[in-house]
Image (cartoon, rainbow, N blue to C red; front, side, top):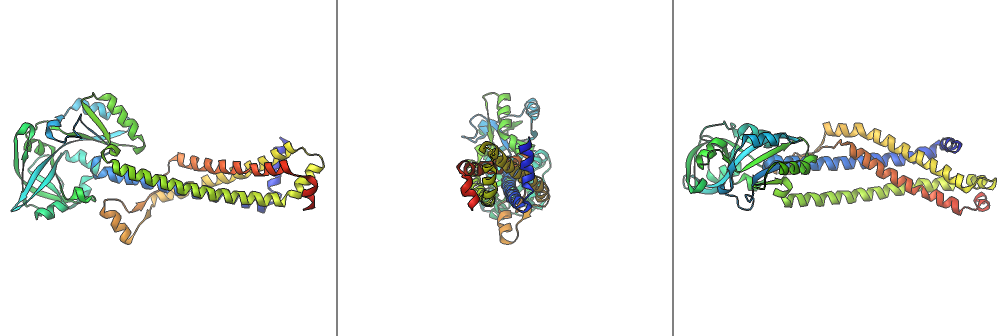
Length: 405
């Protein structure tokens, strides 16, 4: 115990050296936590933007639908099924859809389109469809009216209150045809979606395709994105083999792979940062050993055992590194909460590029507790590992040579 007390007192015999050492650890922890939190926050926000496009976090279809997306692979909507899935942890909303393809015509212009029948209220909770309106009004539960995507409206040369004709094949080969009024125009960041999609109420779509009470998918809203895989597995256990459960990553594998590669790149950057942090801490330890070589040589000459000296130096390193880590973590908390409430916002052409593809032009910070703990532990481990350098120097130390310096 007296060695621990001596180690603490030794730290403050040379306040400048101790403060420099703690400052190196402090800035390393703050920088690591802030960069990591911004990276995690940016990817979480990107996933939120992606799922609010169209896919949602999770989709349930009839087995085989994703490989052959036809109305023949639709299934009957079930209130009891919806209620059981709503009881799954983290699920905060479910919206049904009926999706199919038709030929859209306006005057002498035609184009193949994807028709999406939705429940206007629950669809807005899942994908914020109403927020994507650039003209007109949102859908009602009934009525022969549609929302056109902006690119599709331009291609068909349609504007608000114009009439659109749809012709296609309905459920079990029935003829699907109808005239619909353009009630609103929406904009999607994805050019592919923006050029080929239109929305109508679920009831209207079921009448068009002669698919009474039939749907092609359930789309899920989650409380926490981190619960995605666990929630999907719970839903699979609830349903029979007649259904398939797909996460947004299964639906958009190329996007998921791109994000995973970006995460690897960011982690490599953090590794480089950790190496620089280690070099900074090692520099302070090197300086300390040079300054204290006479002192340590004198202690050894008067009979202090090397084991006690090693314990003394390790205790000093632990106090220094832990002090810097704790202060760094505490200092980063208000910084990250500020960046979460007031995220970094892009401007100019970069902001326009983000918004053009439907992404918010912001870099929010994550305030998940594990981010603070993990980055603090990384720096702590680096500092404690480098503390072995003084141990190695003491083991090799010759008292006479040290006192001559």
